[in-house]
Length: 410
Image 1 (tube, rainbow, N blue to C red):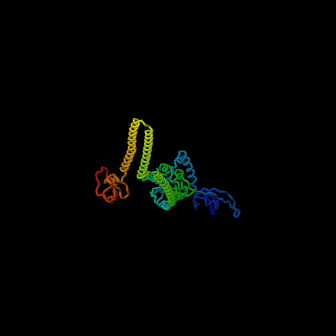
Image 2: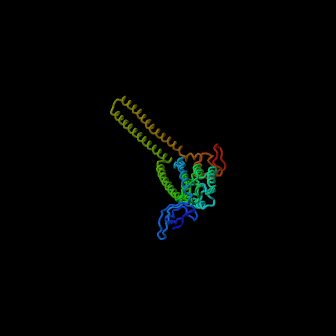
Image 3: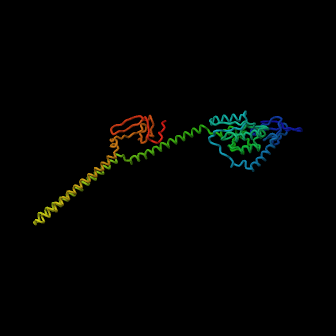
């Protein structure tokens, strides 16, 4: 509790300020100070004296400042300077943070220690100013002008420690409010304590209760960021593994659908053999029918007695036999010729037979890719050559004959 006397030139009265009300005062009363107080008059029976039970007290000049505060607030509100539509978001990952505060105040130490703890990679640009007194307003306005003209800041902190309304009055001046709104970077204020509210707080993009809270508002927690990165990495790893499994399954299906050239040749060979078998069957059936017809004709001749008919029948039979023979030869030779022609075509398509004529298949020794242009290798590269019988391995000495530019070797 606090007990004191309130007096002027003519009179005095005893006062009592109890602890429950005293703890809410922004500034504690000091001896000799002119104050304005509010309370209830009571009678102290032990002495028979009147006393005032005080529940609120402030410096005498603070009432006028509060009136000016409310008038200027109303004016600037009407002009739209405090409209939430003007509020800008704070970048999540700050590269550079500007600080407008006293170079020797505790607020700067709190801000720097908080930034170092939460996000130490952030660059800091200090714009030192007076935060109290007659030069404070001009210093703060010039500092915001330097922010606009200098290196780009992702965000700007305007801060100072606690104090009375008079101590903080520089942050209630119209020039400071307009400088905040003109600032190209988002502004975070951390002026005084939780109960201290200034017009600069209304104009700022974010109002923080203290300088430390302002530093926290502009900086991410590196521990939380690392945890998020770890989660993203785990999710990315799972996504890649899932994609690899899916593509591997698709590759297996596609591989099963592809036919090797040797399989295509074998399939074509079986097709031709089947045709040859069918042709042989047709030829045998034709011969059988011809023999049957011949036997029937012979029997008919044997049953006929006239010589002319016998001779005519013999000639007819001989001609028929000749036609049958020619037909048999035709049915036998042509299919075989067609089969042999198809076999010759298959042999021409066989890459191994091509190698037998002196050609070779040259591959890059590193990745096994087939080389078709001299520009895809350079001197010193290792190559492999597959021959008709065996293979060779060598080193490129020189390239030429290809208009393309040779590849660069790392």
